[in-house]
Length: 258
Image 1: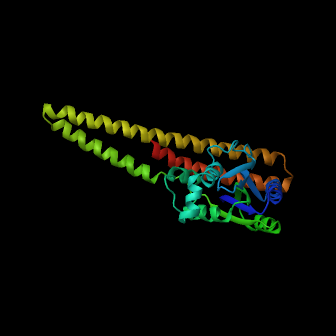
Image 2 (image 1 turned 60 degrees about the horizontal axis):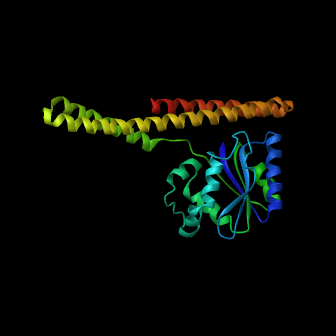
Image 3 (image 1 turned 30 degrees about the vertical axis):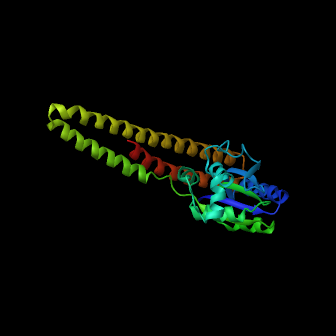
C-alpha cells in the first residue's frame, strides 16, 4: 500500500531519530521508503527542509508527492488550510500532485504547529503497526493517508467533450455555405489546439508514471540483491506487487492518452 506518512515530533533530535528508524524498517523489509525528508515549521508558518532534499530512490523531492506536500505546507496554502479549515485556494494542481485529500492536508497543517518538526515520507507498507509502534515510542504523532491513483477523470471528460464539439462543427462545416465555412474552420482549429494540449498533458503524465515505476522497481531490486534471504523474499514480493500495480495503471493511462 503506497502511503503518505507524516510523523510530527517536538524537536529536531527526535525527528532525526524517527527518520533513522524509518530507514531501519526499510532495511529489514518491513516497509519501503521511496522519498523522505525532515521539515520544521517556522514561527511565521513557513516550513524549512532540514534533511533529505535528495533522499530515496525517486531522487530529489521535486515533482514527488512528498515535495508537493512540503510546498503546500510551507506556502500560502498551508497558512490558508490552517486558517480556513481546509481551503485550497488556487492549489488544486498541487493537491493533485500530493494525491491526498484536503482533510489530510488540514490535519497535518494543524498538527505541525510552529516549533514542531516532522518526518514526511512516501512509503509502501503492508501493516501500520511496525511504523506506529516505533514512532509512538519516540513520542511522534503519526498521520498517514493512502495515495490515490493518478486519475485523469476531468481530463477525460474534457477530451471527450472537445472531440464531440469538433465532430459537430465538422458536420456543420460540410454543409455550410462558403461565408460560414471560414468561421467554422477557425473554431475547429482552436478546438484541435486545445485537444492536442490535453493529449500532450496526458502523455507527459504517462511518462512521469513510467519513470516513477522504474525508479521504485530498481530501488527494490537493489535492496533485494543486498539483503539476507528472508528480507530478500519480502523485497521481491513487494517488487512483484509494485510491477503489477504500475503495469495496470500504465495500461489505463495509455488508453486515455491514445
